[in-house]
Image (tube, rainbow, N blue to C red; front, top):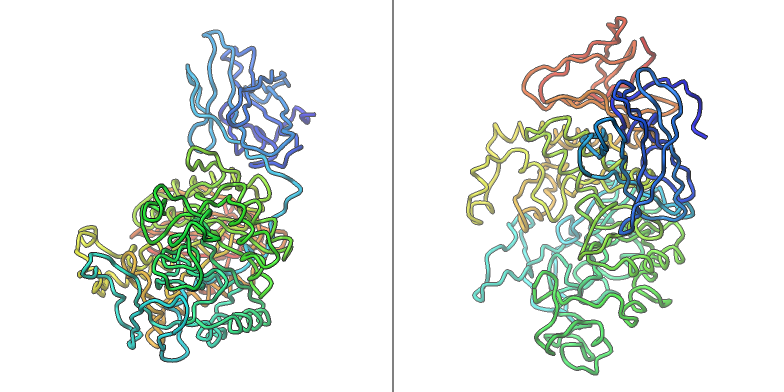
Length: 640
């Protein structure tokens, strides 16, 4: 059951969750899979009994006595098997009977255990449904995130007319700063538009193809009062300033011919104050919930005192929250033949990104996923979750995103935070640990399917974050609106952004470009991070670097699906390997200001970004000197 007594490697601690000699298989496991745990107390300590304790989330722990299984060097080997029979989140730890009394082996840093006198942190074991396999096409390709109003317009915008159209301000100048000052009532209305359109995106498909984009992810495109359109006015109508249904179908069809897919943003936790469903300003035909309790949409909303006291997202009155499990709402969004989910998949979309997924009930997400798969079996469902989504707790409930039938992917904000933290002075060790925690906790198919972001519409531009001085964050909004990095810091920030992109494009998952990042767009928080794409004024150096990275990523099966292994990373030098049956790539990133030297276990290597060759090998391999603020992606040949 546990294999032979001869172990090729023995851990240097009692237990290490990422060491295959201690836990097999690695990381998350399918239900029904036997998991073998091995603990290695030092023989000289006189431990005579080891127990494995496993508890399903929220349940009492189960006891699994571990059997002595021989010697492993100077250590004893104790083994036990646990076979979870259904998906869930499980926690485990060990107790030891020693001459000094009972001891607890709990989770320490980096997967190593800590021997304590009292219970400590427990190890996590994610168990998923083996019958559910997420569509992998998303993680295999490059994604491009478009904020629809600000990417490209095909003509000067004209104010639309008709049902549901509220007052709008149109910018004639594409390079204007978005309106950011409050109006006379102290509100920032977000109702200024630049006229980006679906036809504008169609006109730029050549550009997206030049970046080897395989997925176009749109922020909301449905009719709404605001320019961000997260206050949905009508889920079944394209915003008239963006175009119409025919434009959407044409975009999807032309993208498909180029091997691209389209993912839409689904905002299902709340609607707009100014919407067909709430209709507080009366701009839509028919009765909205704010107008009458006889409205067909009345049951969708949580009124404490009708009509003006109701639940809203983060207390923002323009975003009235919905009761997601109201059957009328579920039918409209998910279940019926012409539901929102099914309708737009049928018209050409390939998946949905769910806004504020942690505020949607598990049952709602599961039904949405099932409906999407019924309509299009390879449709992908991606959640907006900012933390480790495998153990996320929201509103006092443990979420079940990855246990099967809910989310196929999430936005990889932990990767973004780790990249920016590392490049702004953090350690390579911390970056590696952050990623290893995710790799251990996420099912492999999910980890290789993540939306790997650096910038989004909710974050300051990466270039700004990598160059701004600490005191400049204290500028008022007028200062931040006009701010641009001074030339000397801009050059440093560009070098750092190139390092960030090199990491982003070489990690498992879909590297996702926030429109304009590749062109050098700067900006602080909303709305400055949502300025227009600078057509004709792109930073040519950055764009050329992104094109090179995109070509490398698109042509590499190893980067799409190869194994990830972190090597010795310390301080300013990050080192990891991506390996497949066909090739081995070594990524070296030096974020520091002095040369970092390391050995690469190979006889010959070539940098895939510059063509530089490394062939002076000795018994330890090739010695590589990594210049300051430089990334190498080395193709390795042979072993020393």
